Image (cartoon, rainbow, N blue to C red; front, side, top):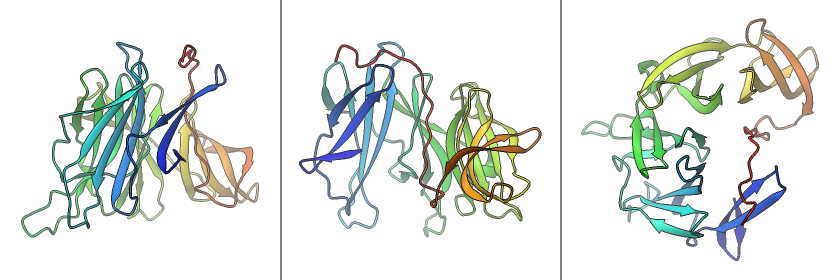
Length: 265
């Protein structure tokens, strides 16, 4: 995301053809009042690029209103408002990062729909957006991942499947458990493996390689550097990728597929 004349702006970049395109968001925002979540994907039936923008006033604002959903399609070059909404107003997205897979855009979210006295902190869930029908679908997580108080979650792609990374803050030695969603949106998850480095705690799991092996950030005593490493789950062997950092959260990684998108734009 970037800014242009006070308006937020999204930049789509295709490294295959070294071409980018700017998309001005539909309105200005007071960031102290609004939360805005953006998702990116390509519709598999039309091969059209879509941006989904979800905007809602922060919960502590006295003029709290319903969530607004807008979709930008590259072929039309315009935004449109959707009449559909989230299943419940109590659903809030926990991170701006989204995952595009098999015609769906996925986000992690928390449902704050508690009991009558408001004692419940909420529970983790996944929201998906069907780029064909342009409808939201609610995806439940396994019971062990639902507790929003003690479990930090993130999403990624593993071998062309959506996975949830669980970082359990209650564990004596916190590691990352990898859960794979099976059968598309059928709400079925299976635990694949645990990412546990033998010499130091893992700071973050950035992404998975095509082979399914994770790329992580950690401070290795062997290399004596805080940096980016390749991790082999079976042997738990780590290899330094020669990328170091003073800030463990300063690196991002994303999957990449050759495409001709933007060629005629």
